[in-house]
Amino acid sequence: MDAADTAIVRRTMLFNRLTDAQFAELVGSSHPHAYPKGCLLFQQGEVVETIPIVVSGWVRLFRVHVDGVDTTVRIVGPAHGFVEAAVLLGRPTDISAETVSEARILMVDADRLRSRLKTDADVAISALASASVHLRNLVADLEKLKTLSVPRRIAHFIVDTVGKTEGPAEVRLPYEKSLIAGHIGMTAESFSRGLAKLRAHGVSTLRDVIRVERMEALLELLYETD
Amino acid sequence: MDAADTAIVRRTMLFNRLTDAQFAELVGSSHPHAYPKGCLLFQQGEVVETIPIVVSGWVRLFRVHVDGVDTTVRIVGPAHGFVEAAVLLGRPTDISAETVSEARILMVDADRLRSRLKTDADVAISALASASVHLRNLVADLEKLKTLSVPRRIAHFIVDTVGKTEGPAEVRLPYEKSLIAGHIGMTAESFSRGLAKLRAHGVSTLRDVIRVERMEALLELLYETD
DNA sequence: CGACGAGTTGACGAAACTCAAGAGTCGTGG
DNA sequence: CCACGACTCTTGAGTTTCGTCAACTCGTCG
Image (cartoon, rainbow over all chains, first blue to last red; front, top):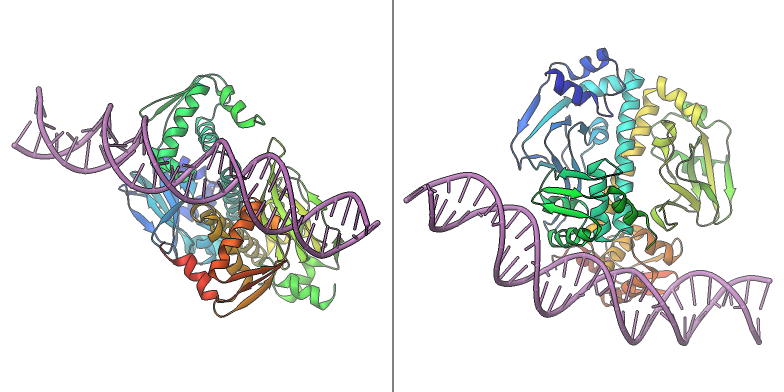
């Protein structure tokens, strides 16, 4: 694994508090594996034996309902792992995962981690930290879904992906709009209409590039009482 | 703490895999504390120094939005703990908690747990298991919120609280209907109307008691394609 | 008895979904 | 080089669902 990839993996909650020695021991000489777009990594109910860390590209976590309809739970990007807790505990996962772009994913051997889990407190704390971050994210998603209207959820998404809080900004959307729509709990049509409504707040969109005139305006939209 | 209370606490994910010795060491001689209804236990942003375990009664976990509106994230009942991960990691919690009935809650000292976390792998694994269960619950809630209509969410709630899958059943609702409504993401009015619609599926309601003629009928409602 | 809170019901409106058609992009192949 | 199809996104029209506001019922408790 080259230095750039290593740096990305080391930014994850699971590895960022470990020493180089600990890290080397856990990851060993494993390399990220390249997956094409649309590749099913695992399905809910399976017992997974590796902890996946996204090095590049995007992975969609979703649940399949009895009638075959699926719901996006989360979209995971570079420097993030997923299903750490279930894998470490040896439980079947409750979600399915598929790549939604070309992606390189490091598969960390679960057994090696599990054995360290029992002897090295840092590893256990790291695992807990990962889970904690996932919990926060889910709580945040749940809150947004329950309280915000479609345009506001879109505004929130833009604020989150831009990472700036003032002045003008420009982002390229990381993946398809229909995926974003599903992620934040709406149809593609509603997303499109919602974006159109945000034009009144200085948001223009050209293909997959979104320009925001003044981030302050977007934040006001989110924080104003109504 | 009497035997009955101890049994309840020992059923939690955090303690159910520990030996009696480990358990005694962690919990010590602490007793559940009695809280009246409507008591704020902590607020989001606070660093909490004890892990709360509900012995009896109900606690509402919620998030307060900037404009003062709050959203119920989860309602926690007997034999369940909450905010374990954040407390163990020494992070500020991302949620607030209040009692929604009279409640007895055991407050387990965080420092004692934290020190064991570093030396005793079982404790670390227990903490991870707790977090994992919370993750599952949140994912399940998110899925239901995104995919199910109001009547179906209510049906799902009934199925979950009844615990039976066939024949007739009767449950007393554990707390106010408006609370349930908020928990499953709807207004009290919609809950009421939704319950009325379920009458066509053999669900009758008298005050806070719900009678289901045939659980199979409810399950069919949830699983049929439409 | 009366006041209060929780729950129900009705009327209305807004928000978002569905279905369907059209516009723009991109890659492929003739 | 252009034409075609595949795909994504957008837009339009109609419908449904759900939230809001308000009135009313019914227990509970002072």
